[in-house]
Length: 317
Length: 262
Ligand SMILES: Nc1ncnc2c1ncn2[C@@H]1O[C@H](COP(=O)(O)OP(=O)(O)OP(=O)(O)O)[C@@H](O)[C@H]1O
Ligand SMILES: [Mg+2]
Image (tube, protein in one colour):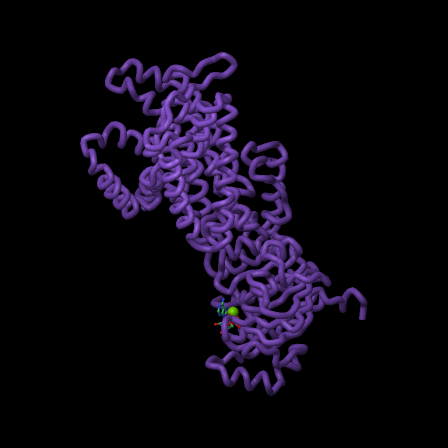
């Protein structure tokens, strides 16, 4: 029976809460809370992607586009129209959902990997729009002067405050997703992954569930994009390119696609790899990722979160 | 005879199923009486599975009508038909191999319960209540099919006999009025076959109508109330087991086939 244990979640939450203090006392990792904001932002996307890919078995190669939609909607509406950032965040999520329905409905009604193709094309188109609609998006130069976030006069204006905001949202998404997985909807999604024929014979409206989970993943990516824009106060298209979509896939493959925990482990690891540990590879970074991905798919088909299972297997023998 | 006994739960009228040039079903007409076990037999490629796919909405027929309790269903989607009360098993077992035995049956409860994606995400009290209901209903089904002790095992780990039984259980969890069983005894040994046949009889006792595709003639003759014989997509005979056993067309069709089913 699929039961996600509470204890590790509580332990992880405690770790996230105390981590900034630990990092504060060790100069070598003093910048880690800042990195963890990015890790958290990526976690939001990978949690949705893990439900979409790992559980429901649908492939999206365009998740960066939803991330970009969130970021650009927030940026454009706050900078050009002076609207409230929170309001823009919600608008971003609504637009991302609408776009997900438009892209998802035609491709998810068909069996097979049409969604992968459609989202690949969609990601490229959105990236072009970000570059070319200069009047609104600023083109390759991007948009600067995006306001920070504040709530009832409380400004999220330090790394620490933003860190807690982002991680609060990550935990909310994490728990929501875990609840879905352990429910009727979650079972339907996992059923679809294995057999669409059997699922629909059990009364599961297969295309409806596929679209729903795709929309959910788009909403989380859009939220992540808005958080990114309001944190950096500046965005440009290169953040939302095809390579980032691929990087997201690497995250969940590395962490493990069949458990939401994998999404978190993968997002962490790739964040630290790309910001800290793989710096000296520079343009060869892509190759390093390629090698990592290759090794993981061959030796750890269930990702890093699959390791405990493998170890247990050794002891049983 | 009593009026309710002779009521037709399923009516298939002039159904044609063409795959490109291949005619898998040709102007097929038949009815199924409520509460009966009706067997559909015929050589390999006769169109039996195709008929199940048409009835359960995998694909719509090229022509013709299918009525379930007087309602036309031939243009409905599979999940809508499941909701109306037709369930099925698959010739090549299609269990959810990523789930436990119990969870497989719980998916079967999907159509008789409501709880939205969002409500589940917030784990609202009514969602918890419904989960508990689904669980206990699924346990009842496991009890009925005799797999209670294996409820937490992975569906994948069961022997073939139990996988076939579990698939029947999963179909029962949808609370069907008609179940279509596609070769429930295929690949099973003698004891397992007997267990499957007994289970099918007990399903009938619950008042559920059964359409049975099966190559094991002993099972078919033992438990069916009526038999229909298909050959190259056409009905060549229909009647009670004794009539079918002595029908020369049937004997010919089978002798002409590659395998010996007697
Ligand atoms: N989806 C499909 N597309 C094309 N042809 C199909 C399809 N499904 C079945 N057929 C063809 O229709 C014919 C009937 O097949 P069907 O599977 O219904 O036979 P069957 O009576 O179930 O045989 P068996 O006893 O071997 O299970 C066969 O010639 C088969 O190749
Ligand atoms: Mg068949």
